[in-house]
Image (cartoon, rainbow, N blue to C red):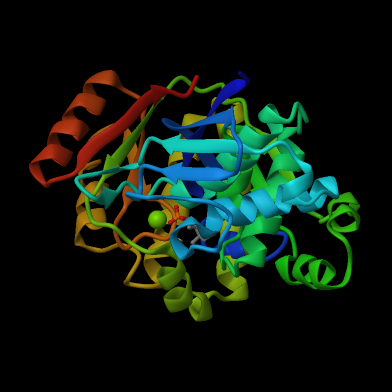
Length: 332
Ligand code: PMV
Ligand code: MG
């Protein structure tokens, strides 16, 4: 019996959040090696199960399984097939990106979308590229009315540290309403996804606030505060940060991340809540730059440390204020 197993990871923003909601803006987003796993097996009828829920479904619409079901429909549409024409399967997804019912906030909805597409691509021997997976997952989320930039999808589909320059989502949504999925997928959407190869020896740390925050609500709360000045200044700092990572320019990594952090602080007081303020303050006196990540208001923050002992001090300070180290890795 045919059986395949694939994984996807999580993601966290390093720089460019909120600005990247505007087409043409760039964000730097890091893949996080905390994984979800999908197992697909031949079956008599489609059966879907995720350990997020305590029941399995088929293709009859179910609100909790909407992401998974819509991803499957996207793939069948893309292949020009109906569900009945394709060999049926059972899909089992495990690896909740959460603990004690509290999500980590590292992109589980993006990850489950890419995971479902990647799993079926493997099951049907389609060999879809990271770029096609990105487009299919974005298409799926746009169909479901997601209000994000799709930067999370870019990072998870490429499973790498990326610089993502966003596309005009309204334009793609318009094409989606008027043209076939194959035609929409063939178009140039105008985004850019670049893999970043950092040359700077440093440690990347993730601090989890244990306070779940909902990106959709944060975006709706903050988006009207975004100004052309915020966009221009953020873009400038993001590009400095990318270049500095690639050219091992420590001072510019630190100053650019401090600057984007200050820009977020000025954008809305909802972003840096008390926990994230404490996560940032823990860098004091250390060779470390810390900031909130993504939409903020909880979830995770990140830090880049240039000194191993300082990393340990930071982790201890985080512990003291109830911030848990979720991931730590060398960037180069
Ligand atoms: O909270 P996160 O990690 O999902 O990041 C959201 C980042 C935003 O720029 C605020 C929204 C987006 O989708 O780009
Ligand atoms: Mg978040």
